[in-house]
Image (cartoon, rainbow, N blue to C red; front, side):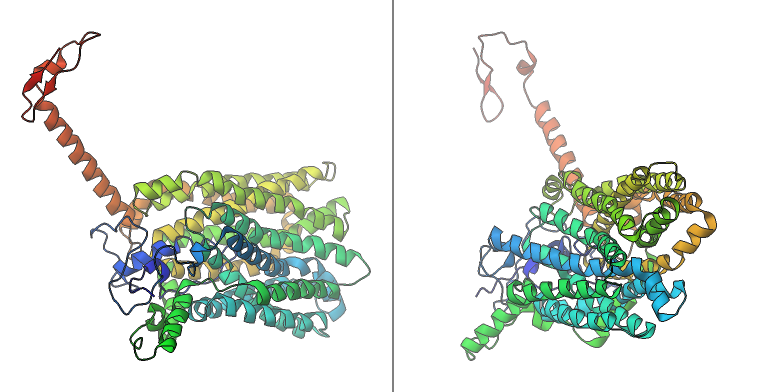
Length: 585
């Protein structure tokens, strides 16, 4: 036991709500906590923009001898010190469980008509099978975000997945539409458990410098899951199995992941691990260690405190922060487009080219390829970041995260026009509009990765609240898009429906470029953005100016002999401490 505790290993009072891409919600978690130690978790007392520069070290130690921390920087109990094998095993488990729950969000999308026919409802009600699941994404974060910080990652994984598996029975055996929709909504709520904290597990065990590959793999998994759903679901519908087997397959997959979670997933959340350590020490010697405590044990977990962090502050930030508002609008559009594709692609390829459900589902391979490419593009786009972390003492300018969003915005517009004006006409080979789904998929991953990382770096200790607002809005938009997609394509035609999407994307595409140029000015006026990079940049400029002035002053004191021409074979003059010529040859 050590009395020195690192904020990077201690708890934050911030909730970490879910999102489709949860990894970036927890990105730079240790830096967020370190900033929180200086600025607090109170909007009335943010990190001072003109205050002292945060220390460049990654660890800031407390001198409270009763505070339980890690036993030095190499403590094997610290998840960031685990072996590479254990880290990668844990990473793959988290990715697999995320693929599982995102797969469930879209797998029944192709069965909407069959379900509506069997239960005697109109097709629009059938589309709710996808939308109601996404509504669960709105409620889930309010439960699993605080829960994972209070009780740890592992227990939330286990509870969420176990109930998630059982709820599939209600969908597979439903004898009316109400039962199907209610259980589908609850499934979305509990599916949020691994989705909320899966990315947090990655950040728990990898530091910001070495997590690049793990980040890319997780990002790919987050987007590949929804793409696999229509492929599998399409072939099930096309077969003689019937739509109910989609839910049986989902249940089998979920059951397999749940068994793995119970057997092999370790606890990774450092604050909870330190709390367990403090409890062990007090139990081992109740008298001597009675005063020992973990910071996690003294955090505010009252109902009022949790409600403030999960609801009040996110709404307040969404209204008052132009950066958050515009990014939320943009990401909501991209998210809506992703889930609209689950209805649009079957419509395009079945109506114009006579594909069956299985063949139309295969078109989603292009979306999967695109999202994978987009996720892995984050690696070369972030290669410069480690140097910036060193230069800016742990807090580089957030605008350096926007390159992916810049590229993704352009690709979304290109993909939308490409799909619309080639998918409309059956005389054009089907592979041409199918290939248009690749840039659309890449755009989804790039825009998400770039903007979510930008939000983390911009709001630091308030990033969780920013993500909460973003998640709620985009989940509502994602749930709404499938409800009117087919009607929109039917009324406007394939070409003009895609053109409308492309024009919306074109309208928003300049936003990352504008943030790159004007973001620092906007952040400087924000109540919730600490802006440590601006203070650090100012300090660096002052240091460089002082160094330059010192160099000029020294140059003026150098004797005139130094400006003479020196010929080969001669040696430079030597001076004593008072800059007087001592020797010369």
